[in-house]
Length: 171
Image 1 (tube, one colour):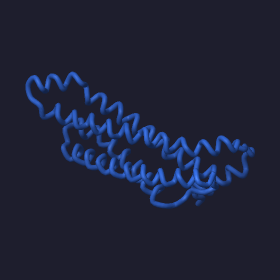
Image 2 (cartoon, rainbow, N blue to C red; image 1 turned 90 degrees about the vertical axis):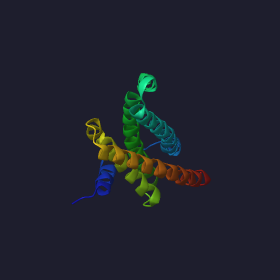
Image 3 (cartoon, helix red, strand yellow; image 1 turned 60 degrees about the horizontal axis):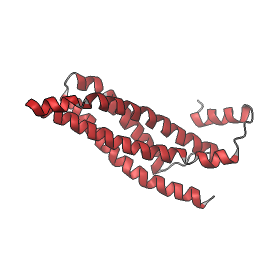
Image 4 (spheres, rainbow, N blue to C red; image 1 turned 30 degrees about the horizontal axis):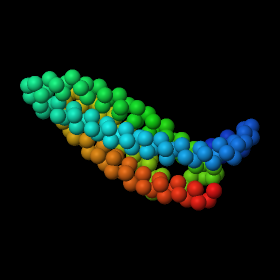
C-alpha cells in the first residue's frame, strides 16, 4: 500500500514540471506562521465569547437579559467555525509549503503537536450537537479540549518563531 508521501512524490515526478518561482517559495514560508498567529488571537476571542455564554447561562434577571442581547452564543459558533476551517487549511498549507520547499516534512514536536491540535479542534467542534441537547459531559469536554488547545497553541507559537528564525538565518 502506498503512503500519502509516496503518492505525492509520484505525482510530483510524473506530472508537468511546474517550477515555482524562488521568490514565491521564499515568501510562502511566512504565510503559515502569520495565519497561525492570527488564529491564536481568534482562539482567545472565541474563549472570551465562551466565557460570556457561561455568564449568560448562570445570570439572572436584568443581567441575563442584557447578556442575551450580546448574542454571544451565535458569535461563538461563527468564530469557532471560522477557526476550525482556517486551522485545518493553515495546518495542511504549512505542511505543503514545507514539503514544496524542502522535499520533505520535518518530523518533530512542532509537526506532531500541530496535527494533534487539528484533531483537538475537530473533536471539540463535533461536540456541538451534544451541547445543544444540554449534555454537561459534552460541555465540560469541549471546555477541556479548548483550554488544552490554547495551551498547545501558545507553545506552537514559540516553537514556530524558532522555526521562522532558522528560515530567516538561512536566507
